[in-house]
Figure 1: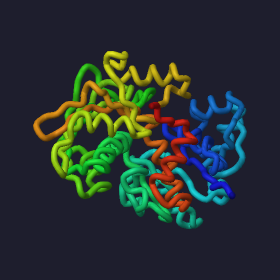
Figure 2: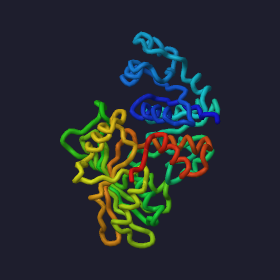
Figure 3: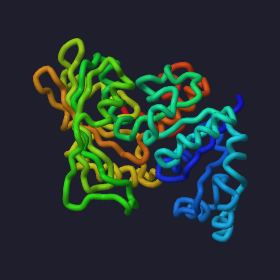
Figure 4: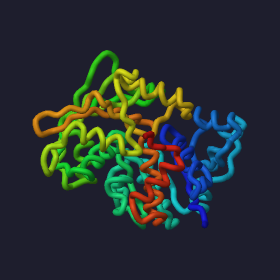
Length: 343
């Protein structure tokens, strides 16, 4: 069977992890990565022995790489010619510009959550609307928060039916190493409804959603609280807990076991030996699952740097018609990424 040939455009926080994720798929081939400058991530890649072939955006940039001893295979346009699909992890707005090149070369692409929805044919999630992405040329992923939120809501919706959700997002203000933005000793509130609630309704239009968002001066992940109302009656704490435990991309944890907060997940992933301390699964605290009248409430931990990687791999499978159903596609992605559900 011919492997699907993949390129990653942009080797930043997400691009690094996309490259690693594709490289782990036994039915895909990472042909190369592309970036415009010898960033710390590129320098580290070179020091590791250059496991991925590097392409640059413009010939004028070549000297910046070669003078630092970083080997360059060619130009981004040459890389595009060699692949079936591009994972565009460029900064927000750049992906839309890159799309012009992809269209001219008749290449499929998947964009990350920072791009506008109009860049793609389908706003995509591997579990909630996989089939809508089948054969499409351009998909756009949901943001890290929305990706994890939809995983949890879709998990309950498929088993019980969900009528509406109300969410509160406690959002880390910047990625690790982002010195150009950040809050110190303060919280900042956005106007309601937060875009994650709106995005959820775009992916899952049968559910009513609203929410608020609070920016916090931290970098290690987000926490979301969700109040969910069942469509066909009350969802008990035990039913929700059983559903979450059965989902491959949800890790159910307990405070008494040491999962005291967001950084506990990072430390645990690092202790597991995961590269960069990444965790593909969202976390749900068993202790947070409570009933409130006919509603069920719970809290989610979102590992923002890695959470969208599995769904992006699912997107390749959909766009390239590799598997026809979400169940088949997500199972293969999970297996290749080492996401193994513990009994």
